[in-house]
Length: 157
Picture 1 (cartoon, rainbow, N blue to C red):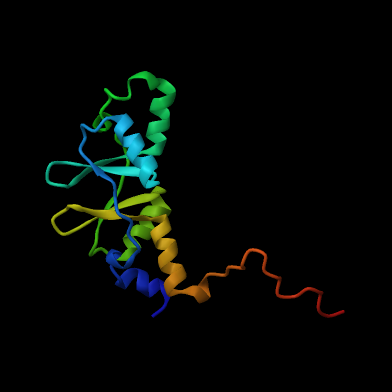
Picture 2 (cartoon, rainbow, N blue to C red):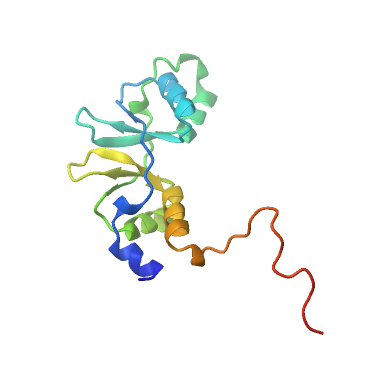
């Protein structure tokens, strides 16, 4: 099978998935900032008591809050500042669903959920890129940094 066929036939569970930062909506913005920094991730998945995603809190939102009111971040819950547009896919969905979210909706982070709707992890642009590079290296034209070009001199007349 080729790349296009695999994207439609293989499930999201085949994509590299990063451990998601899960937090309840009452987590303070300051706590969220510290966690994002320590885990080196750009977003946290905000979940309800059952572990089901209700939104995401991103670095972009954090920066906007810091610029607006940096003094009281301990009193501001992340649940009041969730991204308006965020995406979830089931681990059984075809990878093409992730491709569509990235292409048509500009998704960067996509929350992967199990059959019960509980957050499993994060995938998205990076996960898709790694999948393609690992499974279809011949379709990814990359030259090593510091590598030599294929031809040092021009061929022909």
